[in-house]
Image (cartoon, rainbow, N blue to C red):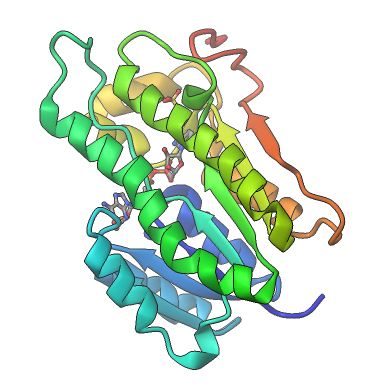
Length: 251
Ligand code: NDP
Ligand code: 8X3
């Protein structure tokens, strides 16, 4: 298969970083995105031994910055074949009656509006080439609501709706759209959710074997290797110990 260009948001840790590493080893040139410049540069240096890599540092919440960053890509990077909309997090795990407005804003602004802002800048090149693949990181939280998940779940339900809407609207252009909806994946996700509290952050993974970022990267590569006439539309993936948002076998 011909070399493809993949833009990955949230490539500084977890699922995005694992995906960047795997795609770099499988004939993709990579545009690494995230806010933490040092991490972007370190990963760029590492992956440059395998493929062409460039970096864009921006906050997905800032539309003008997203626009500027993607417009700044040199001509040889403009034909983005694959967009992995992965940047996102949960902020807090509180009942709706005591949830923080700042956490709510962060989740809606990053997980929903940020995904839209990046897509808005990348989709035109895909429609003009009648070619492309968008992979959105949803979640089991976008399929099932769980206690205290309220706004995070709402943001991922929105990702689910946007993925389906994109698939319909982009169908005429031959653009593939996939959503991947994991259960528990051990990344920095939980540390962000619990604002750096390591004991709270490790609790969801206790007494069970969670997924790793590399497991999701394997699925993303598989999805991208499907023949042109095949699109994996919607994938839910759990650790074997998990049966739903709220049912996990421990010990
Ligand atoms: P991590 O916290 O490890 O990674 C999150 C990534 O998102 C980081 O690279 C971070 O980069 C980036 N990011 C966060 N906020 C912003 C922002 N405002 N602007 C730009 N980039 C941002 O978590 P995961 O790898 O687990 O999460 C990746 C995706 O997978 C998310 O969408 C998450 O909701 C989803 N997911 C995760 C699951 C899990 O259990 N871990 C399960 C289901 C879905 P930086 O801070 O450098 O900007
Ligand atoms: C991350 C999985 O169950 O913590 O989206 O919401 S969960």
